[in-house]
Amino acid sequence: MARYPTADALMADAAGRFVSVAAQSLRENGRFLVALAGGSTPRKLYETLATPEYASRIDWRHTHVFWGDERCVPPDDPASNYRLARTTLLDRVAIPETNVHRIRGEDAPDQAAVAYEGELRLVFDTPDGPPSVQPGRRLDLVLLGMGSNGHTASLFPGLAAVRERERWVMAEHVAEVGGWRITLTPPMLNAAAHVLFLVSGADKAAMLHRVLEDPVDPDALPAQAIAPRDGALTWLVDAAAAASLRGE
Ligand code: 6PG
Image (spheres, rainbow, N blue to C red):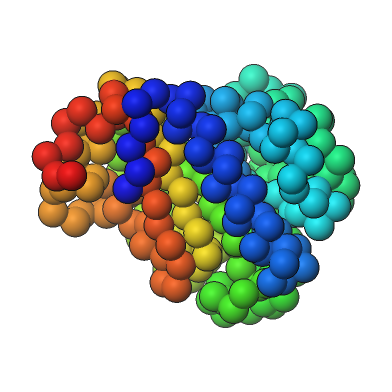
């Protein structure tokens, strides 16, 4: 875990880590495959990555962007995770449109989930079976947030997606948020080379303590379901979010 005095310091370091993983992936695999997080936390990170200081250090022509989850809304809806990344980052860098792999939130949820899994399988050259952990055929980087109820991506407490072991992508109605969500599943997320959790703010402190320091119970605490099979998991947290942690 890395702790930062402020959210700004967290996001600045997260941007540096993003650039580092991108450079390593491009050097080793010839492309960089990244799944972006939704919610409000990553906004500052995306804005930072769009600045010349950072954007100039990433080869966007060979970068492919995916999403860890999406709300089932149109792409121009204020709630859309795609719209957040589009307006804060993707519209400001030279990434080819064909490299932007959004989840079609405007379509019927199950249909959009099946279509997204098909797109992932094509890009990762894995027509069937579980996700590969072979370099170049998996996500190089996954950005995740954590809700104050312990969810991550759209893996919500007590729901089926947390326990999914076959499908790479699932659609699920989430009563807690009053709508349908589409999410990458634990098998897909755990095949990644690097997973970065970004957790900021006092409202996450109690849950961060439970996720990191209470007994493992992914059904109740879905963020605990994230454990890369052959990759690195790093929590980037600010002081406010870390306030209830007992350990160092
Ligand atoms: C989403 C996100 C979700 C988010 C957490 C934290 O679609 O909402 O993928 O998993 O990361 O809910 O959200 P905040 O960053 O807004 O606190």
